[in-house]
Image (spheres, rainbow over the protein chains, first blue to last red):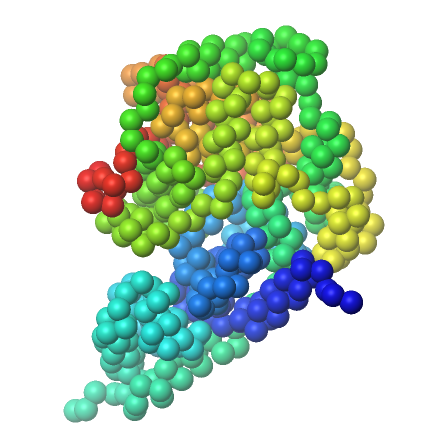
Length: 165
Length: 329
């Protein structure tokens, strides 16, 4: 029996969510440094993806769409959150401080990167997008992506490899 | 250390981070994305069950045609209730704005919003909102980024602004009961509440609420006014450059009993101060508008339970998208 379209879409979306939710959260957390904020941004972005699933599912990199959406609405999130009470069993009525260990020098270095380098790194590292896909998502040339990635990698490598004396 | 090794090391820093929200919660949030903005605080003793049930109240109220009769002098149906003095101020201002037939300049409204968060954990700053007359919405935190996001087509609109602005324009001179329903339902795709009673029960079951409490008429009215206020205030910003939109919003707000209106003075100019207690949990919003043209000037949101006060000031202007793209603003 043919499956109703809505049910197929729900299955597709549920499968997409299960496969990419952790990496999307990691990518947004790397960019924001605030666990509570990142989780809510990612939930909002996935909800928007579901609300526009026929369109988003056709995007060349739907997970990147989610991450970019989450980062784009970063600040306007509070305009919604302040009128919300969590319905999913997570008590978020109070905005708690960041419980994630931000002392990690490497992660801190990611957040100190210039914005464009940080975007490229986040999409490359946590979503495994190749240079061309990152370029398509960000609307810049592949060469520019390569330059940003090279500079960012050099900065991050310096955190891992002590400078030669 | 080669590039792959660097990236693997970076990736490992967050390897134990997991997103543990169930997909059902995401789907429910997506079905009515803005519904959660209108959920009132937890009723005393009600807990998550009461809130979850209330979040799904509104489709029942509107879908069953139980929208409350309008108040004010211009209603077309239902009994006319005496309007409080505050309503008369809003209705008078709305009438003068609705009569304004001047040609609207530009094709978009630019709102520069300065936010000052007191006692909370949300960063303060300046935000730039661009609402085009075609329903697109662009947002940045840095002035120099606004032209770029518009050029790149990073439209964050989802139809809500289009529907809300249309509801406000209709409300300027149309049937107020119908306009209320349109504005309340503007959050839903196509302006139609998505859930029937069966779906509501199923959604609550998936959220762990096995015996959803029945919804009272009082709760339905409270939720309706909460939605109406929140949507109207957002539209006041989204379409604030258009006097007809402001007229409709003010007429709609005049029908909310939990909004009081007082005359005031702000920066030497006459203003109206609207105080809305539609959130529950002692939360309130105080919105200050220009008493002569209804343009929003300032908003103070106070949430005692969150120990947070958010103060916003607005600069609203009509612009053209072309000028924004060229950085001329």
